[in-house]
Length: 179
Figure 1 (cartoon, rainbow, N blue to C red):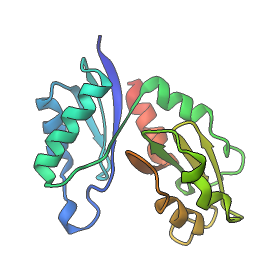
Figure 2: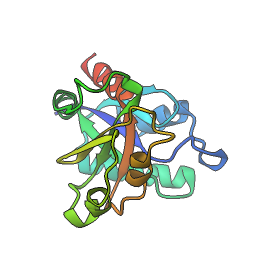
Figure 3: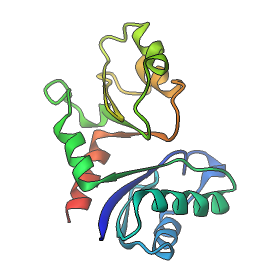
Figure 4: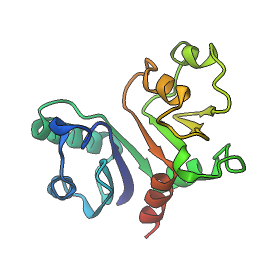
């Protein structure tokens, strides 16, 4: 059965040693048997169709990327249904006046209380966050660059793949999956 996925990569095209042109990512995915491959912006976002299971697809993509990049690259996959549910569950829809300042951190594993302890130990107001399954929603009304919450999220000792996208990117990926 053919499934459509959004692929989110962590740590590509950030700094000079992490360059992965999106044309190469599209070619890599096509070589792995994916079809209708589209990329979005230069930060490692792709949508495509494949008959591979999520487990086999993740392993194949991570192996190919490690060969290409010379280091492991964390990958996160979400189906159209999963991404639509993430959009529908947005706990900050009323508060988030600037979509670029609303983020979703995608996790491969639900976080434990111990992993989230650094967030519980501090008040990040006016920033807000909410953990829902394998996503952490965060609202940074003054932007991510000056946000103590964004800095704390980046330092969390989380297991597995972790990557963050702003709301504009999340919505665009949902749109591309629906096409």
